[in-house]
Length: 417
Image (cartoon, rainbow, N blue to C red; front, top):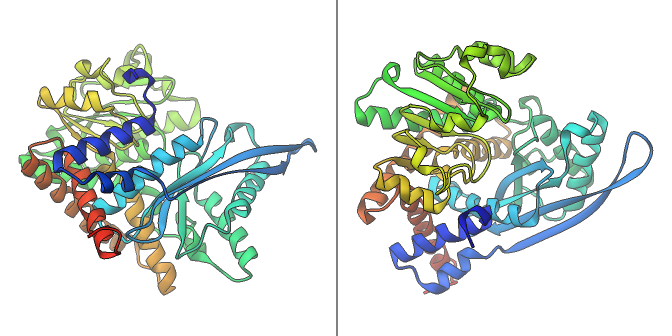
């Protein structure tokens, strides 16, 4: 299979194999960690606004719960498949283990185009999905969260649906809810905020100031846009941003508040013609210190890795760099900080939201962020130390550390001796 044909599931399998070879993992353990506990596909009906009934396909892969209840997002996207849910659920297992929260890994979603659905139709799709999977979900079983094209409102509707079925208030069934109904005040920016903590820690070790650091962000959606704004506010020079249609570049640094404003109104193209790159992909190749891929999987491959100029790649998206590209970049002394570390702020704060739901007591945003910072910076140190010990990439170091924790859990729970 060529790299171009690789899907996210092929990529995650390669990552598991590479880590297993490096750490000389038992074949039996590798096999256990490569297969999900459960994959479920459902169809559920929704009455559309014009009166006809449409069937939607929903998916949930529960990969591993050795360390605690399954945890992972729900995405609404036309390309959603059972294979994608398995790949993303597998990554979630290793992410939870890396940052050492008491959760496993899962992922799911609905194959649909939210832009083609009305608010009422989206609400009914959300209720239909939760109804279809309600026997799998629960605070001690599987705790979903928002993902691509789902948001706090979606989570609130799903929580309400589960509570109706259970006959009691069940705030802890899902995370990423609005704060008014049991959500965390820090959840909206958590993924981007975690990435910023990792970047700041890296620069501190390098003794490099933010104002002397250039950043480019590929993907100006929720996560990428928040990361760009947080870094801009801290004095970083954000030289490039892009969405699926447009890319902007200014070697002197873009005005990120202005970019956010035009994005909200008529799109990034309105920022100014003199700042437009030829294609949205071109932001990957600009001259910058840090590149943040914040869109979809597989954007950095063996076909374009040689064009990447950034010294440091911070993966805010899931799976943006393929295995071959990983090694090409390492050979050029370019460091890829893996997704299971960089974007872990979201799942950490989701875990903290669950803790608050169980206590029925809620912390302020600053306290939540400080708690999340502790988790993610410890994971950063463990990633670097493990990579150095095995003389391997940061991704492989992160995977090895996570697998070591999962292997210990297998032993403690009696699966291996």
